[in-house]
Every structure is written in C-alpha cells, then in structure tokens.
Length: 193
Image 1 (cartoon, rainbow, N blue to C red):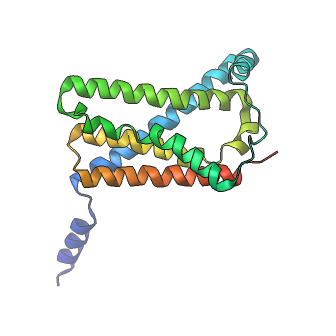
Image 2 (image 1 turned 60 degrees about the vertical axis):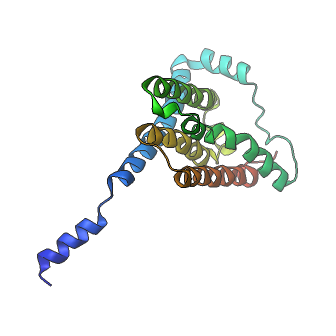
C-alpha cells in the first residue's frame, strides 16, 4: 500500500463526523458556560469585598459541618433524586416540541439559561464568600456541573436537530451516571464534622 493511501485512510477514519463534532461542541459550550457563570458569581462577590461576602454568608447561612448523618446509600439516593431532575430536565424540551419552532427554541433557550443561572450563581457566590474553606465541601462540583452541562448540551444539540429516542436515552444515561458519581463523591469525600 502506498504511504499516502495509509495516511489518508488514517485521517479519514480518525476524523469526527459532523454529528459527533456537534455533540462535542455542545458539551464544551455547556461545561464552559456552567463554570463561567460560577466564576463570574464568585468574582462579583470577591470584587464586593467583605461587605459582599458577609451579605452572601448571611443570605446562604451555610453550616460547614458536613450536614445530616444518614446511611451513605440513603444519602446517595437523596442527592441523586434531587439532582437528576435539575440536570436532566432540558431533555423534556425536545419531547414537548420546543425545538420545532423559532419561538419554542427561544423559550427553551430562556428556560435553560435561567435554570443554569439559578443553579450556578448561588454556588459561585458561596465560593466567593467562603473562599477556599468551602472547597472541602464541594469535591463533587466538577462532576455535578458535568451533569448540568450535559443537560444543557442535550438542549443545544436538540435545538439543532431532533433527537431520536435512543439518543435521548443516551443523554439521560450520561446525565444519570454523572449525577450518581457526584452523589457518591459528596457522600464519601465531604468532611462529616
């Protein structure tokens, strides 16, 4: 086989399909967006200095003691049951048909951005207010944000093209795996007292 042929075949087989590139781009955008919102909120509190940090601490009232002690499996189940709908709900937008019209996509975009902000801004504000002392209590955050980002990414993808049921189930499975992994991390890695 000529060398050029092998090289061309390798590049052709190693390249991503347009559909795969679209999914990868959506995932990068979703994850970057979640972290950008978190970072902006943390920075805003940091710029506000001690008065802003005191206001956020007063509003959030976090007790950095590890929380209620329950059986680890019960805690994982409770965390997953809370976080799965928070992360996965954008998949319902396609089922509701929001991806089929310009107005529907606009409403979907607004709802997804509002939900992402409602979940990331308080966490970012807490990170800005409590600083590095909070980090021991959020080891699950990168994985939890991955779950939220996957939900956002699913919407970004389905607003470009309809998702077949099988693909929607794959998105849901990916979100579920991240939610469960985050719940396990939060259960076993957060200090208990």
